[in-house]
Length: 196
Image 1 (spheres, rainbow, N blue to C red):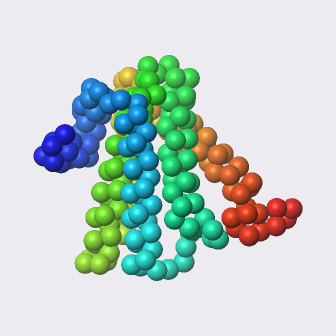
Image 2: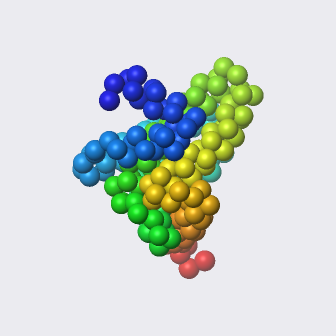
C-alpha cells in the first residue's frame, strides 16, 4: 500500500466505513502478517499512552504495576485478542458469515485509526487544549460508528442492528475477561492482599 492509498483509506473509513471495510476485506493478508500487525498496533498504543503520560503527567487510571509499559502492553494485546475472538464468536452465533481473519483485518485497522486519533489528540493538547477534549469525544463516537459498520461487513449481516448486538455481546465478554484478570492479578500487580 502506498502512502496515498493509506490516507485515502483512512478518510474512507471515517466517511464511508462500510465501503472501507469491503476494501480491507478484499485485500489478501496472511495470518502471520495479521498477528504481526496486531502486536504492532498494541505497541503503538502503548507507546503513545506512555508518551502522553510523560508529557501530561496526572493521576493514573491504572494503579500499581499495571502502569508499567510491559504490563500495559500485555493488557492491550490481550484485550485486542479477546475482542477479536469475542466479535468473531458472537457474530457466528448470530448467523454471521465472517472468518476470524476477516474480523482481525478490520479490528486491527480500527486500532491503527485509534492511534492516529491519539496522535491528533496529543498535538491538540499542546496547541489548542479545549479542542483536545472535543477530539476525544468525536473519536469515541466516530470509532463506535466505524466499529459497528466493520462488524456488519465482516459478518455480512446487512443489518447494523445485528452488528450492535454483536458489539454488546463482545463487550460483555471483554468486561468479564478484565474482571477475572484484575481479580487474580490484584494481589500481585495492585499490591493488595489476595485474601482481602
